[in-house]
Length: 274
Length: 350
Image 1 (cartoon, each protein chain N blue to C red):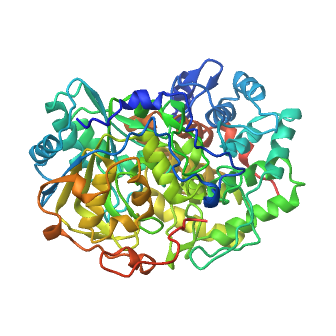
Image 2 (image 1 turned 45 degrees about the vertical axis):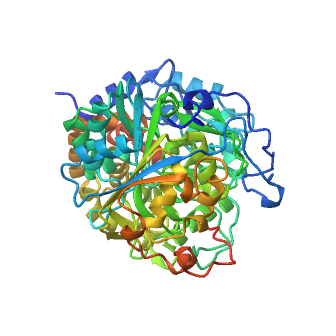
Image 3 (image 1 turned 90 degrees about the horizontal axis):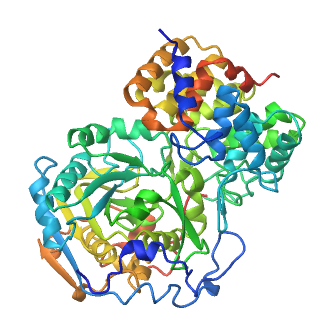
């Protein structure tokens, strides 16, 4: 009987479109699924594709009109080996943080923080901030102002009681609830830092993950639990396996890649060493 | 069939960007620089007469016949055409009513087939929850679609096509749209009847936000808010151009919608062949003054019919079926009969 990691890796490899990976099996290649698959499979062809599709400004992602989706730059920076392309990607992250946005009673937040948005020049959100934070901590720990800012964003946006929503902790006077996927990715970015917030986030994640099954949520939860040696990681992996057998993550390559990362040796590449 | 209707594939594949478009730096729009008629009049003929049907429905069971009648009432022409149903599937919370009920979606699949549709698929790209698998399984949508043998398309990860916009209320200029949306002969927008804490209400036009892929626009699709939420509602709806609308008001949501609001049992379905006319009717049923919703007021200038005298109201009368939805205090001025606000309704997540 093959292991879950082997089955996930096989499914991911079969999703390949030419030398790289699209968001669905066989669909045209894009940066985020290619970067995650490159990490999961240690895939040199995918790395070569990334190097060949880096924008002149060092970023990655689809661009249309004035909208640039640069949020995949962070996972590309993690996937790329040390060298010029990775440095350019990290330069892009350093230079392209979200703008400072004044706080207001509708969406209170620390106006001195920035983080990273899904697209440039828009608000910094939890997932892109956590991923950029992870990329910089792994690839350019000397980027202290940017790393400190990313951590400050996560600290500021923590939900009441712990865990993370997509971006804000409060809107129009209503506390926003945390979710599994966003909490897990925030914890990946915050590894070894923000001890109080991380402890509360882990407590939330430990109780909430069974209630929000889905490939992406479970895969990210497993990644966090393995890296932080949480005892219930085996239970999460078992549930992830059942979910994969039942729905195959609806063919979502990003979910499959995260699951392959979380169940295999590539996860160590995401470990932040203090 | 409305004489003003232009085949949507022809429109979506058109090459010309609205000549009225303005190129602005950044995403934000300077309203002072926006032209008076920010749309391409060669693409959007003057709105004609619209048909909207309001139907009582006390539960989500046995809806196929009701949906069939509703679609027939508004003159739905699905024979031999490919149909994409676009429900509103944002997030899942068992304690409230966020999403278009899956049973209504399944009933619409069956009704569309009975009307001769060549194919029927269901597609959505949630703008909140990135883990789509969780939402479609927890909500029960995947199970009901399996039961009626209808495919689901994830619009956040589907193949995409770059499309010029023919309106320029925002400075977006163009959109990436999923190929299943562009290639469908008919898109049916199927929103939940809900209040919305930034837009006032979310109906068939706002529901089109789920057609743009999160992998470009983010989770949430924040760049659309930064572009000007009401303006983006108009531009995206004008880019998608849903030919038919079915609003799920059997159980809607009031208060702090679209996610944290309170379920409200209105017992209504609204069918339409014009997104503006449908939203005018649905907003009226919610006890709102539709023309105080900026997106409806602007869209009524070119995208669809906003004049009640030009809307053929079928089924139940609107006036005797108003179910006042509670709105947040900031939207009190939207309520029909209230004093108009002199302030801006613009807002959105930071």
